[in-house]
Image (cartoon, rainbow, N blue to C red):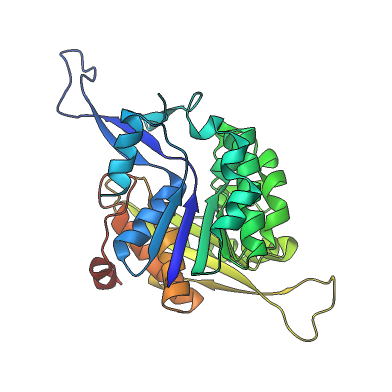
Length: 335
């Protein structure tokens, strides 16, 4: 049995109800939903079915915590407000239970007890948790360290958020793990932070795809990552094209010790998905779910896994909210 585990925060999201404005256009009612980068991946995989999914976190023992638990499975939490028209968000995590949890909650002892070898385990984390607080950072390091000790398949989405701190600070925390975990996901912005910036003057999706492939191979070589993924988007007159590029390290006889690894790269550009997102949320998390599902549950090629991930991300953004509600039937129909 495959068991997927995600570790991270959950937040309540509030978005203005377009049908509830006063005479001055001010919002009089907000719509509430639940989300969280790590949690979103678990929900997406659970909705596809075929996985046993677990989300590990800390929520308050009160009505706000009940809202989150009710949304995930039949005081203080993090809250963020979204203004879609202004493309603006405001986050409030200062007193969240997750950001102020005691170190003893998720210590090495907890994680070693959790990874018992009873399942074919897959563990997913994001860089967001590393940046939230010192206790979150320590808990995540313990989680990754113990998972790798037990031979668990680990995926890491850097998911850098500038509002939480400089990229250099985040990368200093995750760099020791990048060559050890099984999958790392970055963005085009992060390529620039890693010294492989993509020109803003590229005038075609084809040119962007080529540039990203070259840069990603270089970064994969330097970081000695096993599998390094990047989601690509290119604006069109109506909507956008979505595809992805995946670089992987091929080790074998003849590779000199300490020398550069042999890296191959695949792109799903030839099958790029054209989309008009209803809401630009949750796509990256759905992509991770689609990729892991294809590679681990169905043992597909990197190219096919990338295409499935692109398709699930696009379908997820056809709907409102952080959570993917795309079923496996809908995913297969969209491929």
